[in-house]
Amino acid sequence: MSEKIAVLILAAGKGERMRSDLPKVLHPLGGRPLLAYGLETAKALKPSKIVVLTGHAGDRVRKAFAGEKVTWAVQPRQIGTAHAVLCGLEALKGRGPLFILYGDIPLLRPETLQRMRTAFSEEDASLAILTARLENPKGYGRIVREGNGEITRIVEEKEAEDWEREIREVNTGIYLARIEDVRGPLQKVRKSIVKGEYYLTDLVEELIAEGKRVVTVGAEDEDEVRGVNTRAELARADAALQDRIRLRWMEAGVTMIAPETIRIDARARLEPDSVLHPGVVIEGSSKVARGAEILPYSVIEESEIGAGARVGPFAHVRPGSKIGPGAHVGNFVELKKTSLGGGAKANHLAYLGDTSVGARANVGAGTITCNYDGFHKYPTVIGEEAFIGSDTQLVAPVKVGRRAWVGAGTTVTQDVPDGALAVSRLKQQNIPGYDSNKRKKK
Image (cartoon, rainbow, N blue to C red; front, side):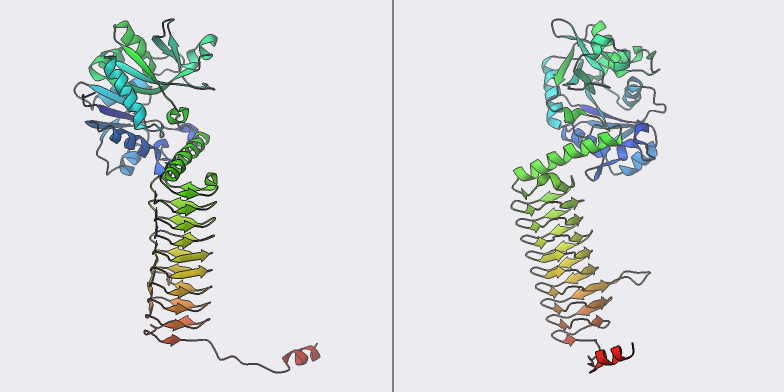
């Protein structure tokens, strides 16, 4: 267990079944690319080195993860997993244990890999294989054992006999191998007659033939080891990930009403005693502070919600917004790159873009900030305790001072001084007898 390990992540597949121009490992899951999850799991092991093997559209994958401290390797032709590992080993000079993971298996837990590491060490093995028992094992290689329970080989489904297809214990493709023990046997793996590829699964028989120890560890959660090869499998992984995210936050003290209807990005942060109502969507690296309440069908994108704030229902908080402690954002209010000070309110039917709203200010129904002139965006500043009447248009750049007042129906094109009242509507005129005169003309 004291040995330093390396990690090889195979991410070279084209993902033809995704029917997409986007490389498979860049497809989003919970707001992050699939490959991000494999990298996160690998980092949790504190490895000496992480190698990511790319192939199809590898330049796009490397660009997407340009900031990661990994070593990149290339499989020029996708001719099987055994060949892929050989390509990856070229970047791994030396000896010791090596985890072989996949960029399209996103829900694998570090704890599972630690169990493999323990078994690998205690059994003094050359190879440890993560297996799973599935109700429907279709598509997976089957684990074939002797009468004493020892693994003898892995047979791919397309090459399996009928009795072998009845086996429910499957190969997940996740391995822990001793580099110096597998280099030679990998060279001996033969091309499959059926698919014309070099299967990594054949490594088992090669090692056993050399008298090396091969052990298995069973996965406790089948969702954890399922790969993503189709849009349907991506959706299933997303559902499993959302279950995991919601459970984690509820255990941390977050209240969720109808949690199955709520979506939370993997990067979001929630504090205890916050409350999420049905249909809430929280995207990106958003933060919801203690005691905040997000009412039904509100969307929070890359924004911060302060302690005790109240948002919704049907509110849209777009990226770059910050709602202060105790502030209110109500029905059908949209914010974009806007901050609300503590206790400020925008309760009804408003659009505030590129706006700073001071503490305890009140923004009336139907108010909009006219922040775009067709070429550039401009800011609006609303001072502390200001009162903005209903149906106001604030034409940016403009500033409304502290404790200033803006009458309903006003179009503000100039700054309003502290404590002043701005009114721009026309004087009302009443025309007596209008109805009777109108009817006489018919």
